[in-house]
Length: 492
Image (tube, rainbow, N blue to C red; front, side, top):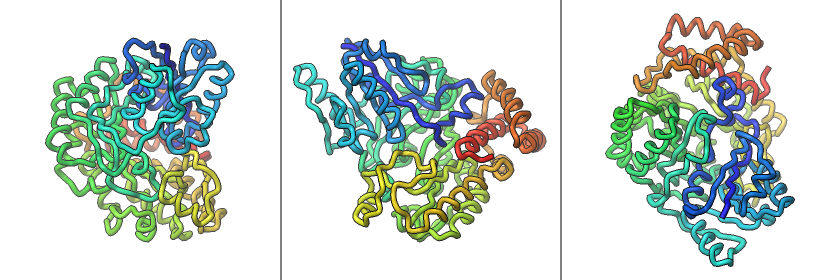
């Protein structure tokens, strides 16, 4: 059997980092971890190829070669997934689809031959058994959640790791919280399920053998869902593995804001070379936090919590939202002030949208306010429902936020505020290597000479040289990120 695994392209979004990747000669931010894991679940005798459309185009000859095309995607990849589907239909090659895009709305993809939904550890073996017996069904789904302790390591041999800015792995699935705009609990449940420490170390070894060095992203939706296991098993094991391998990796992940309450956990993460964590802050407005059931953030000094994590040597990146029913026009300046005061450099501000499997979607549907299915990008100036606030006022306010925080002057001021007091662990500091040198030279050309904001670039570089020369590579890296954000948000 010949299987072609296809990862659809991402549009030019906040998280694509497309405009930043050219500085470091990378083609995509991260590989398609889901498809790499699916590849490991297929019979060993089957031939497998993977095409990531974020890296290159898909050839007709590759589709003709395959007995089946397996496609996995998230909602934001839907346009590209449609193109792959049409091409497969033209060439009469059967498709097998899975992942969040198809699981969330299978009815919209009825022209795909086989839908293998929910968690593949459960549904894929059922499909493979039926395929072997010559009686595959159209739809496979389950309400059960998989034991990921039996999930195989991703097959990194199918990709060229040098094409990616970072590699990925997964330790846990599920989130104990239940924010009403988030579909994680609908897809993966509220019980946190874990891989064993041995599995994670094995996956790190596999990544190490590829020759890749740099950042590894733990894609968990809430990495700290089981703190006891982290403190007692995983983080000490990663720390020991890092030391034995001369610290080849730094790590990033996602966690809830209550990470700041646990000094022991933050210290252990920093010691294990976790250099960055994404936190869902959403809004400084407590009424809106209660509205969306973000109760973990209520009655908390959010600025102080961010500061505690940063002080532990772990950078905070964060998500923010406007468009809640209880938002007033004052929220726009409040968001700007909070972000600037926090020193959060990478602040992803999005308009509220309602994915189809969320409690928010159900409520808005009942109220007759849903307009269309959310396409997965909350930074493209669109909303899939009718907001309470006048939409023109909301859009203007949203543009005010992103235009303010990502103007080169405000962005660099925030960056300097962060760098001034940031003390990363030694293992987590940006290494000087040829890739960094190339990025520096390209930043000089594009940001220091050709860009309209070149004065701000040079002010930052000279400030860093004078105040924090040890963090100059980090300053340059974030200058490049700022360039990407200005492009995505179309800020002049």
